[in-house]
Image 1 (cartoon, rainbow, N blue to C red):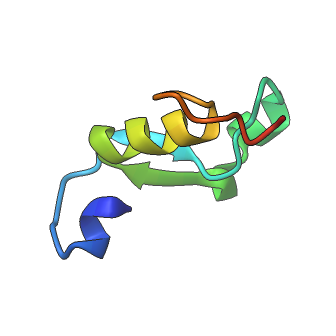
Image 2 (cartoon, rainbow, N blue to C red; image 1 turned 90 degrees about the horizontal axis):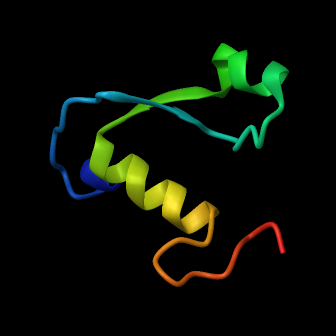
Image 3 (cartoon, rainbow, N blue to C red; image 1 turned 30 degrees about the horizontal axis):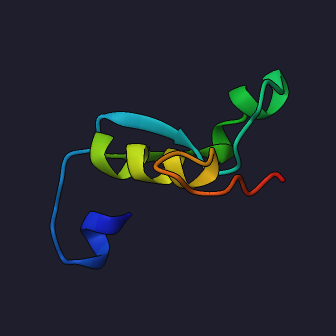
Amino acid sequence: MICRKHGIRTAANVVDHIIPHRGDTELFWNRRNWQPLCSSCHSRKTATEDAGFGNRSKKD
């Protein structure tokens, strides 16, 4: 995600949910909702979506 935008190749080691599942098991197991990310990009994306790092929650 961020790595690729900067032309950096980083091995993916996390399966990310493109659309956050928020406990929805059907969305959780939907493979079309999966994307590979490195742990750094996954952490950044999750923090943005879940209001981490002082961000406001996008679900509010």
